[in-house]
Image (cartoon, rainbow, N blue to C red; front, side, top):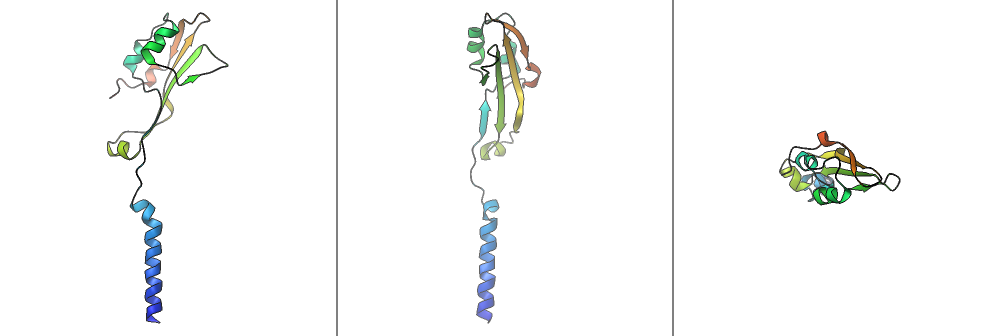
Length: 124
């Protein structure tokens, strides 16, 4: 009877450790940046009157080019910190809170820029 109780207690302890093992020994997760990380300094280089090639040279390819609105380019950025990011206390950036939208006319010239105030002053 004592052996049975000892076995049951040991089995219960092993089961409890196995179930909590996922939290006790975390698996390495990668940092997940999505989009184009831009700074306010980079965005300030883009001016109304520039052509699309100049914008591409300064900022790179946009994250979104909508086929229904080809005269609008969207640069968005999301970041989910993984193991390394959390270790360095990098904040998560969610819901495209950092974005830059650039509008062109039919000749490919910048007419309007939105979202500069959502970008950080600099990138490190």
